[in-house]
Structures are given as structure tokens and as C-alpha cells.
Length: 290
Length: 306
Image 1 (cartoon, each protein chain N blue to C red):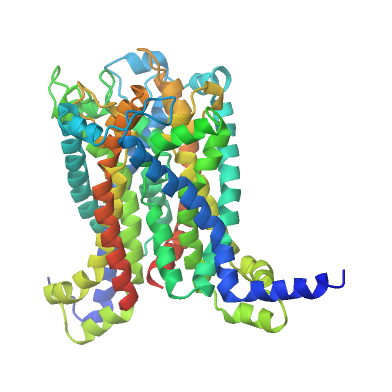
Image 2: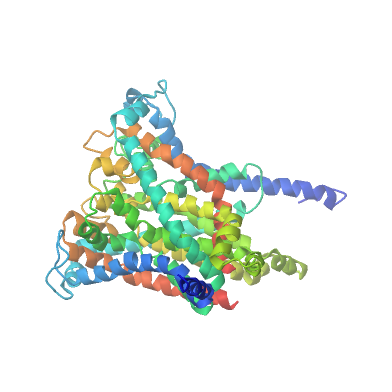
């Protein structure tokens, strides 16, 4: 490459521009490829039946005017809203149970315990690796022995088994980043440990806790295997099983409604995810690498 | 009344002691996990030695019969093989692409927030809903993948592949969908690792005159290898234990050719109601998980030492 006369001063901005350009040239196609199925879902969900069935028409854009008919069908003629409500209810209860168990545990593991605490933390984390696909058979028996078959309560009971390990690990990471001088001051002033946790630590770590809330909620929102195994009545289903098991039936797929149903929850959840992603990374690595 | 005051105080002091307080704070979480992960795991092992069927917790003890019967079942053998192919191919694709993407995504640039949102979509969206998008992409009648293929003249008229109708293509469809979903996650993990590498090491290397491949071999790779391994270990677990993609995309078809351990366990244990048999099938996952867990422990200790 020919260097411009005068050297560095002029070369620097041009190098930066080229660097930026390659970044867009790499990241851009990745973003397009990864988001593309959602784009097609969006377009298709507004597509008229006639347009969809015409093999000559592009599936990537409307040839007939877009229609809201399928959204209308989804919201009025199916149990979609019911499933959304069920999912929100389960998610809310799971978040509460998870916080009640994981906040004290995460704090204790970050502050109070010594050597065995380290092993315990890793042990709790490892249970996150035991998958639903290994536990759904025995749990299906446990759930029916408890008389919780086909109820949302079965999901509220079982979901914390994977959200608690995950949340404890994240919260431990967050609590470690808070200087212990903060609660030491409170302890000197005569406050109890639990009091210090409640009044000093919790307010400071609110962003971290909010992150845990978001990710716990989205984990329980997306869960599939347990819900598929435990729930059979349509009106008790959650979104993630209701849409694929109730809206796909027989030979005639209501494709547009189906795709609309899949798209609606995906976007807000991904938005929340993106907002809290940096904090999530901080907590994750805070726990792992200190 | 008079005695309650001091005792209460002593109890409070007791609670303040680390030796009592820490276990008290940790107990609920540990109890919950023990009851709902440890218990069922033991129960799964017990069931796998019995001929229990749906609707009962007990059955006759039949030793290793379930395991040996499945081992000689051709569908199970295929499922085992498929699981390994699924894990291996998808992890190669995901790790290579995620590392490339992370290298660029760590930079600052205009519009990063929006591009990152698009990139994160497949992982953030509930997976069963994302798979529906791919069901549409691979549909036998309306596949837009095939439409694009025709539009750019890769596919001639009438030669459209039936993605979920032929074993090899069905595996390709499954792997594509899963890699699509896992790529954002691996990218996030690798990004986190790259961000935690202290800048001063690279700066020092630059000052010392380490450039090009020397810097790559002696500085960057040793620094990045641990986080790549973490991403790989998570990827192996998330892939080997996943059932959603296969269940929704092909449900093991065509002709049971794309079953994984997970979907075969579901088919056997829930759909056919052979609880003991299904438990045995799913327990074949345990060795994979054990290896990953041991490697993770080893890593955790290494990180602790350094």
C-alpha cells in the first residue's frame, strides 16, 4: 500500500474507516442471516391466503395487500391470550420462588463461606447441567403422585429446579462486585447481617437482581420439555407448547396465524435480553473469573 | 417472659455467627435442588432397572434388561449415532462462526446495539417458537429456502429438496436450526471471555514487539482457549440434551431416521408409556454429561489457581 505523504496523521483515520467497514461487512451478514427467519415470519404473518398459495409469488414480500386477518383469528378464535396469561403467571411465581432461594444463597456464597463454599458454588452450578430431558420421566411420576398432573402448579414447582442454580451463580457474581466495606460499616453500626443484606446490599444490587429476574422469566417462558410432558389440557398450556401443539394440527396449517403466534412473544423478550445482556455478562464472568 | 429476652438475644447472636448464618442462607436453595434434581435423578436410575409403565412408580426389578434391549435396538443405535453427529457437526459450525463474529462484535461501532439485537434474536426467542419459523422455511410445499434456491438458479424447477422427507436432508435441517439457535449464545460467551482479557497484556506484548502470528500463538490463543472451551462444553450439553428442535422439526422422522437419545426417550417413556425403558434410554446421556462436568470442574480449579 502506498502511504500518503506526511505519514501517521492522515493514515490513522483512513485505517479506522477501513476497520469500521470490515466490521460492518462481517457483522452485517451475520445479523441478516440470524434474523432472516424472523423477517420471513413477519412478512408471512400478514400475507393473504391467496398470496401464500400462489407458488409464483415471492414468499419474502407481499404481492397482495397485507392483512390483519390472521392476527384477528389468533387473538379471538384460539386460546392464545390464555396461554400468554398462563405463561406470565408461571413466570411470575417462578421468579418469586427463585429470588427467595437464590438471593440469600448467592450472598452467602459470595461473602460468608470459605473453602467449602467454593465447592458448593460449583456444585450448584453443575446441577444446571442436568437437563430436563433426563429428569422429565421421573418428574412426571412425582408430579402425578403429588396430584399436580395437568396443572400450572406442576410447572411452578419444577421450573425453579433449573432457575435457582442459574440465578444463584449470577447473583454470587454480582454480590462479589459490591465492596464488603459497605456492609461492614452497617455491621459496625450494630445492624445484623440479614439486616445489612436487606437494607444495604439489596438496594445497591438492584440492577443485578433485575437482570436475574429477566433471565429467570425468559428461561421459564421458553421451557418446553416439562410443559409438554405434564400438561395436556389446552387451556392449561403455556405459549411455548400451546403454539406448536394446538395450532399445528392435521394437514391444514394455519401458517400465518402460527407464525404470528411465534413472532409476538419473541420480539419483546429479545429486546429485554439485549438491554440486560451486558449486565448478564458481567455477572456470569464475575462468578467465574472474579 | 423474662427468660425469653436473653435467649432471643443469644439466638440472634448465634445466627450472626458465620458458621450458622451461611448454611441457613444457603439451605433453601440446596434443599430445593436436592429434592427436585437429585431426587428425580436417583428415581430415574431406579426406574431404569424396572419394567415400570406409565401410571405406576414401581415395577418388577429386571436388572440391566432395559439397557441391553435398547442397546440392540436399531432405532436406539441410530439415535445414539445421530446424537454424536448432531453434537459434533453443530459445535464445529457454531464455534468457528461464533469466534469470527465475536472478534468483530467486541469493537465499538455505530448501530452496534441494533445489530446485536438482531444477532441475539435466535437465542432470546423461545426456542419452540423459533423452530416454527424453520418449519416454515423447510415446509414441503411453501419452503422459502427452496424459493430462494430457485430464484438464484441453484435449484431447477421440480428438483426442490424435501427437507424433512429424506434422512440426510432432515439431519441437515436439524443441524442448521440448532446451530442458528446456539450461535448467539456461543458468541456471547466468547465475547465475555474476550472482554475479560486484560488489555495491558496485549499492550505489553505489542510494546515487546510481539506481532502477527507470534502474538497469536503465544498471547491470544492461550488467553482465548479457556473461554472457547467453556463455550464448547456448554454447547455440548445444550446440544446432546436438546429435544425441542428434533421433536418439532421432524419428530424423529422420516422412518425414525433422525431420532436423538432425547426424542427416543420421550417416544419410549411418554408416548409408548414404557417408563423404565425410557429412563434407561435417557440415562445413556449420563456419560456425556459426566465427562463435561469433570472437565468443567477441572477448569474451575484451574481458574482458581491462576
